[in-house]
Image (cartoon, rainbow, N blue to C red):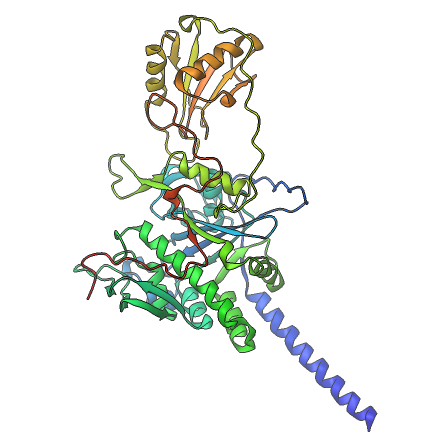
Length: 491
């Protein structure tokens, strides 16, 4: 009898294990994968003192209307089956020690340089665009081109991407069970022209899920100033609230909800080939799960509205402050300001080589303002040359050759010119740390970088390791955040 009972139990255990294995393999088979980057190869992370490395994941929301589910959820018929756009782009940074998470959103209307990308499926080569809207990157070979565009602009190594469409947002929102969001007044995102997401909520806190959650994430008309910048803030509120909701109610401890969420995620996600299986996704989830809510920071890329002709309403990375945020991510500095202060490097010593009189110092000035992935600003070399000449450097000349640089730099070819190069830097307010010897130049060369887009004097440095106010950082534990309703969109 004992032998018979043991045999039956063994068969049951084996059958259950087999079913579990088949289900696991079924999920693995549904994962859609594409190339991580279609641009330049990215460098590997540098490990910290403890041998740990950070993790950067680019989250991409596609507006594709390529199937019945997505067509039903939004967009005019003329957009059906068109090339998808990357309308939501968020870089999620997990610190090397897994103590904090920082998220940066880039507005879809950001104008920048998109590098050359080749579609791995069709072989079509999309030539580089010197000046284009960032959401177009997805239509130029897939998410790997969006990754390449981010790397070109920020210099941040990206480890993975995750792409999701409209239907995926709805199904995952349903699986989670609803997320609380807040508006300052009654809101209806619809204007007289029929534009808007259709979101309609009472004032105060409401739980949104399914299609209503998608409406919240897509709302532009009706929030704050009705721009994409306001939409990014609403998305940050939703994501922070979703994390709090999951942790508060332990939704993922319910096997049935976990199964539904897993299936919704797998059906709607496209990931890079570095994510091999469900197990890989689980490992990523565990890396995120360990970070406490109060150490999660959502921020926007500091930006300004473009003043270039024919680009009204488009935005560009804000000089200095956008690069400050990118640098903090590159150097694994938390955006919440709670990181360990770094030891300040000693300021470079002033050269013992005496400088010649300004009129006796030849200087070549180059325009490097396109070094942040944007269109170079015309005439910058000429403007800075004029400033030098006004200061007595009469031999300063503008060089027509461009030299894209994120940061302004003064270079000199031999030790005898170090004092002269430092004198050039001092005349314009450029820090001595930006003066360096180089075999790439002859004499003294000044490259005006992307960090100096306007003015005759070099702008002061952004405060060390502090997140600029323009990033509008939102802490994950902020339960009082509430979207202001745009006038004219109440009911």
